[in-house]
Image 1 (cartoon, rainbow, N blue to C red):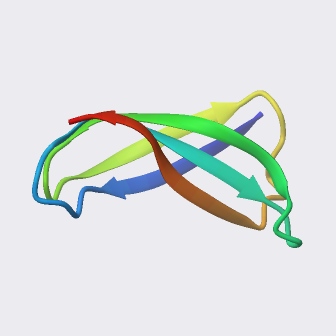
Image 2 (cartoon, rainbow, N blue to C red):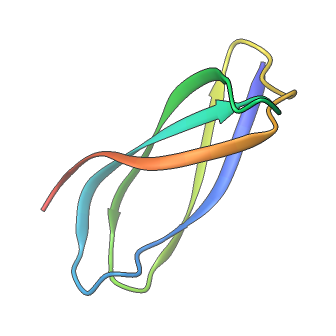
Image 3 (cartoon, one colour):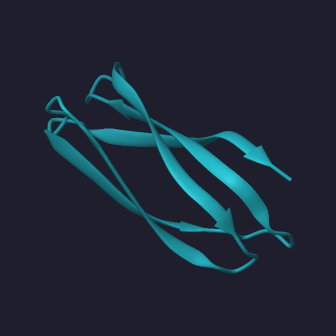
Length: 74
């Protein structure tokens, strides 16, 4: 099992509701190992929230992470 932790900051000027992130983990050749989702919830402008997500498989050999917004309701 592996765990992924990140601080998520809303740099915008409005609240983001039901924020879900897509977290793509890649190896040193920029090949995808896996993509997992992380639920942040509601985040106000300037607010920083801690994201904790985990998976039942080992992705500790990930070289880099690419994070994008998967879904939100604004």
